[in-house]
Image 1 (tube, rainbow, N blue to C red):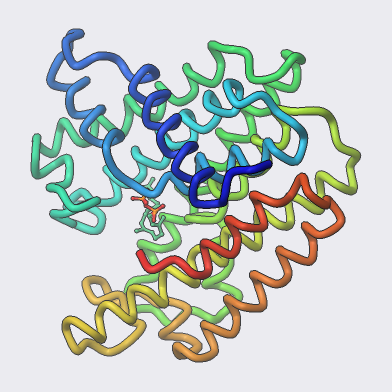
Image 2: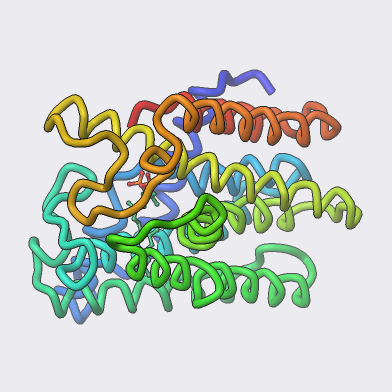
Length: 297
Ligand code: GRG
């Protein structure tokens, strides 16, 4: 493995962009406005953290990059749909995403709703249509895992808890429960599905990597809360750690910035310790874990 982490990251981001471009219906295909809006929502932006996790997971089992692309595209489409719906006036009511107008602003609300719906089904179509592993039973199990991670007992469930928590005092375990679902479920699924694209691991190894996925999912959210709090404090002078728009509880509002940073360090170390027995095959996932805690955006 000769490429540096940043070269590897650039390669995966680039191949994900091309794979997504191919996986989405062309904007010249009817209904053109809907397809144009779907492409607007997905292409040309985002860190592609979930595709990176899919590929890093796949490295643990020697999975073929083309198979990982397919899983990565499906997960990124689910992620993009969740952002489109999350930005709508009935949820967070945001006007900017990835530095450009949100889909309901650029198009209209009804189109944004349909973009989310259509991206979600396109994700499952994409995952069901091509080979992601040699065993059809395993492929069905993977489709089921993505559905579980996205649905009412995964991301959507977490979003429902989040919407219900506005103005509430949550305990730390309640906040953790929400984020294990809202942000964590898809991140966890990214690693697990990437792993399953390659050779089989034993049950204990699978369970250990599943735990790594759970920890990285929470780590991502703790870091997100710290970055939000820092941005609020720096630019607006708002109370650090409160979601400015919605007064939602965050790790920073519950723990303070210092303890939230310590917690992030502990989570990072826990993930790295769990990855150590996998040796060189876990290199990219370990690097990605360190990237997530160091990220500035
Ligand atoms: C509406 C069904 C439904 C679900 C929404 C995940 C989610 C659930 C909403 C996103 C809200 C949000 C900003 C959460 C904080 C963490 C997070 C998921 C940030 C966005 O993900 P990134 O940073 O975004 O990976 P990019 O743009 O890089 O892809």
